Image 1 (cartoon, rainbow, N blue to C red):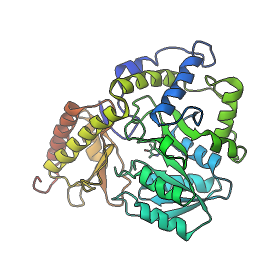
Image 2 (cartoon, protein in one colour):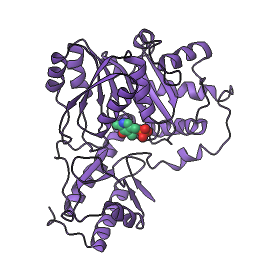
Image 3 (tube, helix red, strand yellow):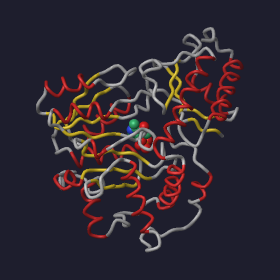
Image 4 (cartoon, rainbow, N blue to C red):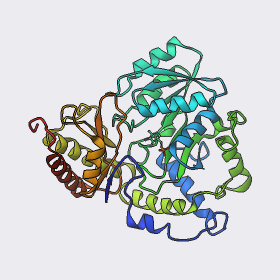
Length: 371
Ligand SMILES: *Cc1c(COP(=O)(O)O)cnc(C)c1O
């Protein structure tokens, strides 16, 4: 089956093979692997040795986002969320339920947030302490610009939290150049092409130290993860980790480096996304985003068939032809969401486009004339 989903993504056989072993995570034979992963991840995020640290947690991206909000925002603190997609709204819910005061900056879900919009919202409410931004909006495929938005956050004397879950590994990040960033979070199972199971935060040490004690949760306290590393070593976990997924992640990082790191991976994903974007338009399906707003991670298109389209039926019929895509959409208008990430290339995209065309034909879905 060819997986064209936002994650967990298709992985390389070598990565999956690393899972086929029993490992004791506290064993001296494994601790160096975990410590090495933390260093490699910090480097990919552009963190500075001694200034930034990698603080992992077991689990998924939502856990990391909640941990970041709890750790770095004081209880009752106020956070601005540029809301141009579903993952931004999830940040708001995670923060609200953790007792933080989340302020939504409502924006259309078809374009990136503009720095001047964020600057105006910060100027209008001086009680806001943080901006929580989604880097790659996985609901639609748009990409926000953390460097440009970070610059206005910095100028306003505020702090920033970055949800880079579907970005890091492929989209660039330079934590060293963005001192306003308390933390960036991401996971093993998206652009790094690892197996799901581990979340990562790369955070500023000074902010971690200044934030100790405010999480209101032992499990989700990144300051406690840091304190534990100082006490017990960088190869140690507080609680039992998905250790096979960690072993696989080390291999996934080797493959990431061999591909040319972030730049190499971005080039492949961008080629995949543009091939999908143009190929779907060629099948008479309208893109949801303009070419300028289309990011390299996810391609969304409007559902064809003039209101009579059945997404569930389409996904099942496409699966029977060997291609699995997302079976739900999260955009304002009904769309189909297709992933351009994972261990896939141009031949896979060509195969998928062929299967999509054949499935639509078999279902008798009417389309516009090919673009
Ligand atoms: C996937 C994703 C998440 C959530 O990740 P889970 O592992 O499903 O919890 C959060 N934010 C963004 C931008 C994502 O793409």
